[in-house]
Length: 165
Image: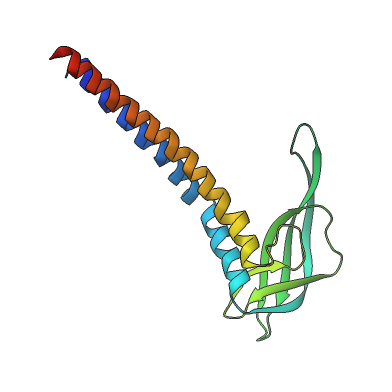
C-alpha cells in the first residue's frame, strides 16, 4: 500500500470515528431516553398526584467559571390513580419543594417527574429548544469535523496522485 493510499484510508477512518464517538455518546448516555421521556411528558395526557420524598442528597457542582451551584439528587414515590405505588429518582439544581406534586403519563406511570422543578420543559417549544436544537448543534459540529477530515484526505490523495502522473 502506497503512503498516499494509507493517508487517505487513515483520514476516512478518523472521519468515521469522529461520527461514531457522537453516536456512541448519544445512545449510551441517557440523552436519548431522557429526550424521549421529556417529549412524552409534553405531548401526552398527564395526571397530577401528590408524592413524597423517600431520600434526598445535596451536592455541589462547579458549573461556569468557578460558580458553585447547589443541587439535589432525590428518590420519591407516589400512588397512581389506580392504586399502584411507583418509585422514581431524579436530580435538579436549586431548592427542592417541601410538598411535591408528581406528573405522570396516564398510560405509562413509570414516565413521571416532579411538577415545577427547574429542569422540566413545559411545552413542545421548550422541549424542541432544550433537547433537539442542542443535539443538532452538537451533531453539526461532529459532521463538520468528520467531513473536513475525510475531505482533506481525499484532496491530499488527489494532489499526490496528480503529481505522480
